[in-house]
Length: 264
Image (cartoon, rainbow, N blue to C red; front, side, top):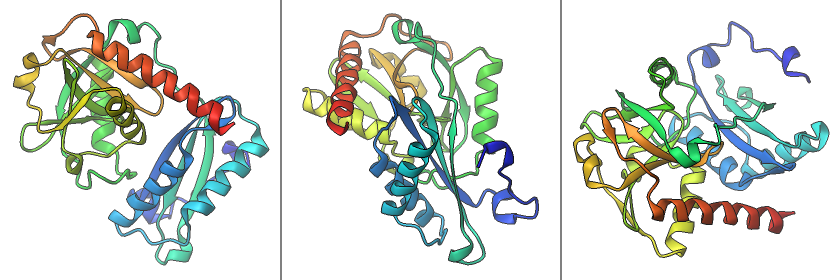
């Protein structure tokens, strides 16, 4: 049905309390990217917070294909919401096509500015609807004319953006926060796979704001933005996009083109 006619009852306690998980799938040229991975992560997120339901990854994938065939959306962000209920059979699933998000193209050349905000998500590996602190952090970034806020956990380490994964880079070494402390993004996993195949060294360790000067630069990954270079974080400024990062961005774009051609 049209989104304007869809509704969630005000008395739905599970929805109003954020007892749910979600995924966003990029659709370009009518092709949903990495549907299997997104559907599996939705199931994993539900398991982490104890949300019981009757859906399977295969069924979710079929629903995605059915919806795209019916609405014939060429380019969009496909959002999947799985909201818990008092029993598994009462869990509700919503899938909708939303307007795609297109970052300003100049950011890929100049890099973006980010600020930092203190916040540690209670279930870092689950993509849940409990998003109030992240929403407030993102709003603080917009008020500061920044692209996003980077979250600092209780140990004082940079972990992720409000809707993205975070990395720093030194030469051809990419450093990511430990996977146990973050939401392991689907795009993040694909970028790391491409990086590994192209001679980059991958390191997982804590990243302190005071250590940013040790690196050549930083970048974010997300479904909508793919790889977004970071020019500055708070008062720390790097400057031009490092050559190795520019190479990775181009290589990843080629990977996505190859993926689209193979799937189609």
